[in-house]
Image (cartoon, rainbow, N blue to C red; front, side):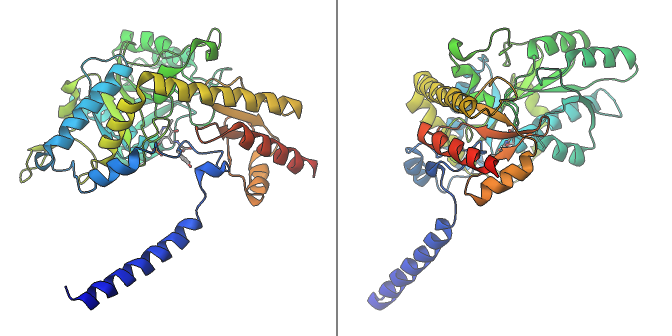
Length: 396
Ligand code: 0PR
């Protein structure tokens, strides 16, 4: 390349980066502490180096990237261990949505194999909207289970429904470990008893809770509350667990883990001209970045690292509740995980006013409340500033 061309190129690159920077500056930043309603956070700093290293990898054609494929197997093993499964099978995919859709694909295929015409799945009222996408795509039939007073799935409703509709085969139950709105955990051991009796598949959506509950110290566990959610519970066949939420990995990094590799055949699609003959993931061309960052961050932090992060989030959760009390703001429930629901007569209205004041929260649907997800980027100072703003906002 001529010297002048090179100079011109450099000049152009500088201009482009300058422009990109301006756009990026319009975005909010987690570290500013104004993002209070997100389940994502600033990725662990090691991510930058890993992203660069794995930039061109494509697990859609794993034969070309055997190193990255090995990493995926290792990371699934690590997540499996965290979820009490020595023999896991799964993938690091784009997020909780893809993970939940993947699990529903298996439930549907198994149902078809049994010759059932309708795919009947119990799903809690609190289920994430990703299940609605799965329903639309696969024509699933959901039986929506109401919540009990703990805002968890009413297991008695499931039992009664099965008894009253014996002719209706039930194919699956979706349970949540760390619900989007409140962070609640369905009573999965109780659900398991019913599932075992009727041979029903349980899928647990632990997109958020998967990287919280295993590291939650006893002192943060509510008395009489059930925290069991993983493969140690019978009939739990698949679990969604997202590294890009509390796992601190950069987006996109979701996780789907199955009890063992026997479930692969329900997902496999023939890929005659690629380096491998079958593909099980929904997305074809997929980056290996999520795999490598998750592997690196999990190795670096280990159990102890995640325990500290979760404890810090829980301390800040309790701190927020304490500060709320000082201003007579009520919590909708005792926090189960690092999510606080602040009772409010008009949560949508309040959240819009707060947004104008520069604070970004979301709202609950199952109870009139504002919702704060106390992610690792939230500090006590941010909480102090937020509470004062909320008090101010309520004066008018
Ligand atoms: N399952 C549960 C329990 C979830 O909470 C979510 C997302 C998903 C599945 C889907 O995960 P993906 O979004 O990775 O596909 N929960 C958050 C929510 O809907 C996602 C989110 C994250 C929203 C960051 C906003 C935000 O800034 O609230």
